[in-house]
Image 1 (cartoon, helix red, strand yellow):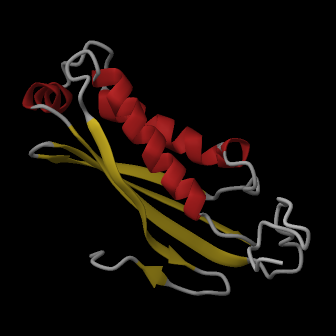
Image 2 (image 1 turned 135 degrees about the vertical axis):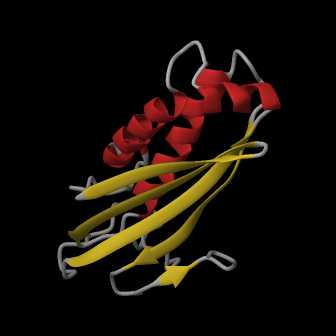
Length: 159
């Protein structure tokens, strides 16, 4: 009817059947950032946020979120992830986050990588909101995916 993979021939939502697809190694990398005031950025960098180690907590939250993506996104397959990493870079005006997810399977891990970044950034917001309620989460996007039928894809401008 529409050519969209998550709709059946009557236009109703469905989870895509990946049972006949070959298992291949798949990797996805996502990124995003959170802008904040200098006081919040300094407190995160110095480890003086009252709630504790912001980046360590955000890293764990991102990894946990990637593992639960199938529970959060209605038509995502639950996946047996083999690896998830979440890394941070302190910027002049905030923090950049990058997440990578991988597995050998029949469907990609793009949503898992983007969920990891999103929840990691939300955790940073939650832990530092007493210092800066005006933080802005932005630019959450897929940077790269490898594997599967469509092969490798990189976002324009991605290093």
